[in-house]
Length: 128
Image (tube, rainbow, N blue to C red; front, top):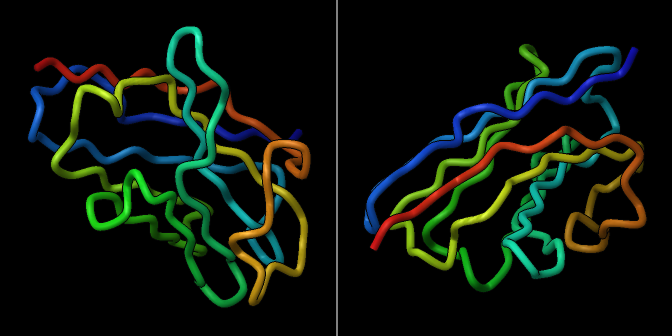
């Protein structure tokens, strides 16, 4: 059974840091793209960052560029999202998702409709 399980969310003050983890089971990361999305109350689910497992190329939304870092430990089938300098507007439920694509060179291309598997999300709250 394929599963993606997010962890690491919580309450943090503005300016603080959190590291989210996305642990996958039931498949290996070879030839997958892993994407972090987030959804704040009343808003659409937006793409935050993605990583292509084959070449470790990355994509960041403009709103998080320079503050967030995505990384992958393929041996552990886990992707991380290091979030620094958090702002109140970063508060949301963060979801990781995966899709089986040859994403090399196209890590920026994949969106919500392209994902094959989803986690249940982890809540990030940022106090001002």
